[in-house]
Image 1 (cartoon, rainbow, N blue to C red):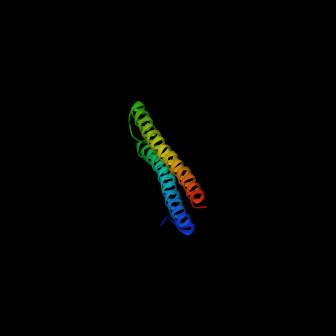
Image 2 (cartoon, rainbow, N blue to C red; image 1 turned 60 degrees about the horizontal axis):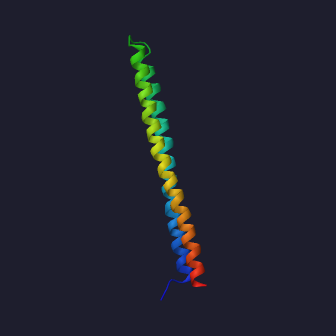
Image 3 (cartoon, rainbow, N blue to C red; image 1 turned 90 degrees about the vertical axis):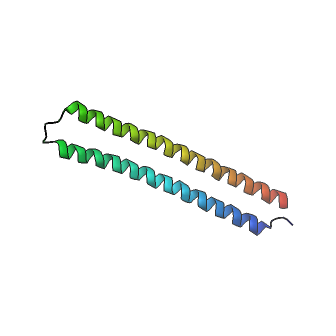
Length: 102
């Protein structure tokens, strides 16, 4: 015996909820990463402001930190796209299963 309409709806809603939670976690981590990068750069600038430090070295470190953040953002965006694709697939599967039982 196949799944009932209630089972199909429940499975769809559970999958959707899990995928949306994953997407929310990715967004949170992405924002947190951006905040931490900015905070680290500000902290570094604050600590080095009154010290005799090579400005080029500080600039290089800042650039590397921003590059690392960009790489992290790219990875987070890829993961968000995967979640969106899975959400779309979940929706399509849900609709197909409903059509199949009707």
